[in-house]
Amino acid sequence: MTNYQEITTTDMLDEILKSSEQQPILFFKHSKTCGVSSRAFAEFQRYLQSPESAQVRNCLIVIQQARDVSNELARLIGVQHESPQAIIVREGRAVWNESHFTLESGALIEAVRKT
Image: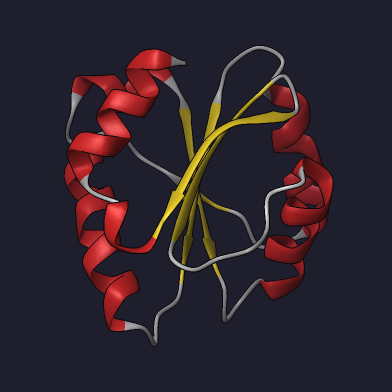
């Protein structure tokens, strides 16, 4: 199973976005109080068990604990905030994003394959 890094500060976010020059980043935005997000997070965890998940750096933003991080990511890459949401960033730019019921492990795997 591939690990993920939880992003809790905007300084961490800035550092991770810079690293997208070397390796794509998959950001997963999660709300701990939303049933749809809980289902999507389970799909994210299934995706992490796939070999494809090792091809990108996987990051988690928990909205209740890091709303400023979520807002800053939306501002920097120009993708409107949603939750749950997955975004793949390469070279500082969003190259794929989906939200809500379309967040399934297969969709995440396919998106990573295409990056």
